[in-house]
Length: 216
Image (tube, rainbow, N blue to C red; front, side):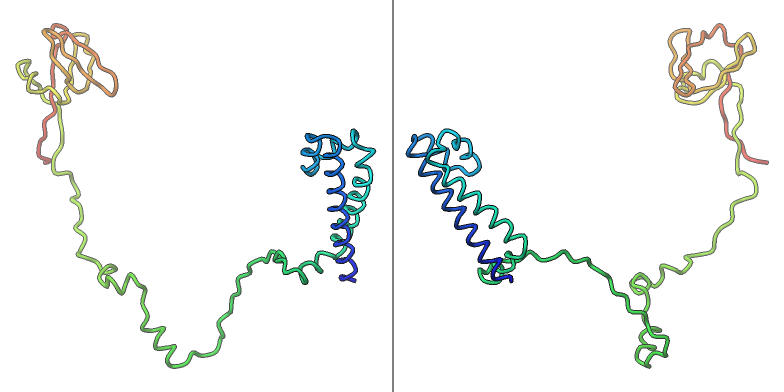
């Protein structure tokens, strides 16, 4: 059956080629430009109406050949061509399946037992001391070693305190804390976070700096 379908497909292809050549020949008989267009497959259909009296036979033969070749190919003629004309047949897509062999529950041979006992992880073989404690953990003291407190500062110390955290109290008893940024004449700039504020020295009642003292 495959050979019959293969022969039918081959006959259809021959008829298709004959029809194509007849259309090209009819196109050149009509005009050179028409013949050039007739040589282009599919596009040559455009010249059929103007050259029908000459290209009708080729069009009919080509159409019949195309139908026969298509039907024969779809019904199994392709296998005939794959076998007799050394055409590589597309391989079906295969789903890769992973095979897993469950280990037997029986006892291992002596060699395998010895191997399983002697084998160690690669990290442990390369660095046998990696999993061992380096030394005893030193506990932290129960109380802090020192504490930070605010202590009164003199106005003459302000230049030395630039870049340090200070606390000022104005004459309205309002307190402000921040880093001393700059001193400009009778004003100081205090930065807290992303905000910077200027204060007049005449409005400041008290200036305090941070000092470190030992914890009692």
